[in-house]
Length: 238
Image 1 (cartoon, rainbow, N blue to C red):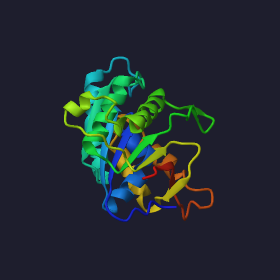
Image 2: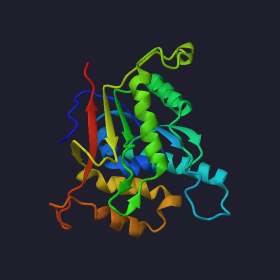
Image 3: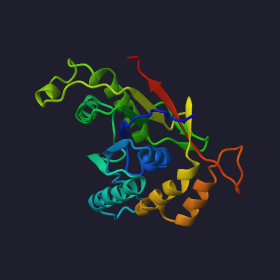
Image 4: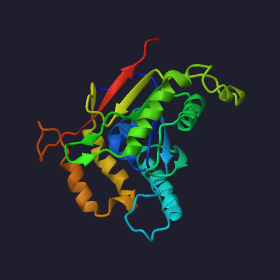
């Protein structure tokens, strides 16, 4: 299945770290921008713990990851990027974070919102999902409903001139219960190219390329691969 929206949409991608948009749904983002949709990123942390060297300067790493994210997003056709710069690894889906996300939903007024699944605790039986991913998804879904569309939630935002707004759809990536898949085969190499921009995280680019190209669908071959990205799509009644 594909998105089949027709006219141009405003899409807001809300995820935890720099590189999350590219890893989670970079192929879909490339497809959407090429199809004429406008995409903005809201990243909740700056990824300042994305290293294992205790001597690293986390403030410098934060700056580097901002730059890497802007470069990666540009490969996919995205230029509007916002960072909340919460500490990496310490994200909590509390009222403060919910209010900040609600502020951006009301400010940017997206038709479509993309976030990750707070229910995904483990990945492929060999990894634990990052707690920031789960916190980001939970806070974002809580901001979408009921906060962003109801004027009684966070009335201080009304004083900022931010009127209530509810997205028409939410797309949840990193989910184990998808109901829609997008064929992103023609965008897979662009996704990999975007990931290369996250130099502080990638390390061995050849190893990354091999790993990413191995993620073809089971019904395809190495000679003729096919790639998909899956989501749980929620379409709200209007």
